[in-house]
Structure formats: structure tokens, C-alpha cells
Image (tube, rainbow, N blue to C red):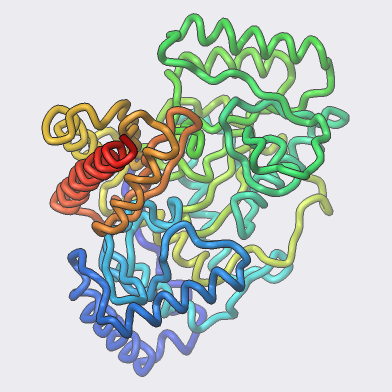
Length: 483
């Protein structure tokens, strides 16, 4: 992808505030203070003194009580960090390898993004679809210029919103309007689409819709299974797809797919699988809806459909997380009629500014492409984890799944109990990660590759090895006590 030049700063063009010498001097001073404070956070460290820890525990307890449910980790960040390192309010510093489940690809306190935060001070806090600001205009132009029209993409329009779930809701609405009276959606087993009433039915996890009604609007195909191979996987998925479209003629509006499943376990398929399924879906009159809330910017190209060379097939795409803003992109054919899509909020000004800057940084720092920075660091992660599996952690690591900035591995037997023990030990040692999959369960990482060095990757993997060894020793001690 050709490097994008940074546009003239929006606020400098339209705001006398940010173009003033006083504002710019204050901005430089604030950025210098942030950089100075964050410079001391470039390594893992333990919590502060006893009183600081006591106050931290009290704060966590209050938060849990107010929320009505405990947080997964004892975690409250101070908001300050340095690249992949984040500071908690107990004074500890940890390597953040889950980044808010994929939000902070450029880590914490990134200078370029902090600059956007300060420049946003000249504007209203939130922007809306009735009264957008120049930031909304800029981010739509930036993303639509990168969809790959030269490679056959037909995506032409985009609509801003405030969450990934809402982006998927809008996608479903515009597809249903276009395909009316068809309303049903075919997705894949182990998919995740969100937690709204409609999205929880598409999401293939019964635990997320306890006590909630089902409306019979979603069906699930078996996903590609590498143990079965391409031909058998296509036979099973394609056969199920044909059975559904034959059984419900004129009732099914779309095929929804995560090209790399996030929560489902970082599952993906060969390009040939997608093409055959898409051909069959299109022949049956279905729209192709690609959910890229988590994969966007993370698989070596800006969009996962670009990574797999599927430009021409895609009708609707949803993006979010690392972009900082969320939106749905769609072709001219799916442009909704007036009144269907609106909403008060399109995003905060700082989120819209930062979204544009994220797109620029991906280009400027050469993260995209087969030999881009993202894939280089991804390969280093995989190499280190493979080395652990053959050395100090032999017998403790099963399957390893990596694609770009999506890193996962199976600890021990891949049970939820195994995963949780390793995650808690990792947290104690200074690494924050999470889990994915539905058997086996895996340790999931969405690292801030935009702010990491090779040394950061090596340090993270060293601590992973220490956590696995410590978890095994704990299991052995427990087994001995029970015996």
C-alpha cells in the first residue's frame, strides 16, 4: 500500500485556538510532561507500599460492588503507560498483551495519539450524525481511500457509530432492507457478533443469551476444520449451506463471517474455502457480510478480506476496536434509504481524530504487507513460543495459532481450568492476556505491535515460559496434596 501523506491538521485550518502560539506552546509542554512521566514505565514492576495496595484493593472492591460483578483481574489502570507497558493504580506496571481486547494496538501514551487527544480539546466532546465535525469527514475519506478499489473492492460508503455491536446492528438493518422480505442470517459455529438482542442470536454461544428469547433468525454452518482438510470441510459446510437455502428459499438475507474468528479461537481458513462458500452464497442471493471488528488492521493488511484476496466478494464490512472508532462500510447497492440509519452519536471527537491518525501510522511505520512490521513481530512471537514448546516448556504447549497481530496458544490440556491458572500466574508475573476458543481453550493475545520492539516480544515470551513452569509446579503440588 502506498504511504499516505498526513493531511493538514484539521483544527489548525478551522480553529483559531489550536493555531495560536499559546496553545501550541502549552501543547508541547504537556506532551513533554507525558513523555517524561511515561519514560519510567518501560519495565514490569511490582505494586507500591502496603498502604497503596490497601487502597487499591478497596477501590477494586468498590468497583465490583457498584458493578454487581467482579472484574476478571484486579485491574484499574492509571491511564498512563509506555508502549506495551501500562501502569495500574497500585503502582504496578504490566505488559499489556490484550489491549482492552484489541483496542490499543499502538500501546499506551503513544506520542502521536496523545497529540490528537490534545488537539481534540478545541472541539465538542461528542459528535453526531446530524451535526458532524470535520474529523468525521476526514476519517471517512481516509478509510474509504484504503478499501482497495483498484483490486476489485466495491465498498463505497461508510457510517460511523460508537460500538462494534452497533456497527453489526446497522449492517444487519441495511442488508435486511436490501434483501426484504428475507431476514435470516447464516453465520458460522463459534462466531461472535456482539451482545445486543439480535447479535446474541447470531453469536454461537448459548451462555451469552441465558434467559433471552430466540427468534429463529440465525443459523450456523460448520467452520473450516484443518484436521478434515479443505475438500471435506467444503463438503460439510457447503452441504449445510445448500440445505438451509433450499429449506428456506427467499428467507435468508446474508452470510455473516469473521475471516479470522476472534473469541472462537483465532480460527481461519484457506482462501479457497471462502471463495467456494461465497460463490455458493451469492448464487443463492445472499449478501456477504464480513465482521472485521477485531481483525481490522491486525492480519497484515488493513482489512482481513485484503489479506485473503477477497475484495470483489464483500458487500458489507464492519470495523472497530484498534481503529478507535466503529463503522459499517457498504457498496452502493446496499446504501440504505433515508430514515433507516441514524443515531445521536457517531463518536467522540478524540476517537475520530485518533482513528484517522491510526490509519496514517499503520502506513508511516510500515506495519502492513507480507513483510510489514506486524508480520515481522508476529513471526517472532511464534518462533519464541515454538522454542518454549521444544525447550523449557516441553509438553506444556499444544497448538499455536498466529495470524498477524492475533497470537494464541494452547496451555497444557487446553481446559478452561488450565487456561485460567496460566492467565492468573501471568498476571502476577506482569503480563495481561485473556482466553479464546471453546475446546480447546487457548491463551489469547492481541499485542500492541504498533508500540513493540523485538525485545518487548522476547520479554513477554520469557514471562510466558515462567508462568507455564510455575503453573505446572502448582498443579503438581496440588495433585500431591490430593494424593
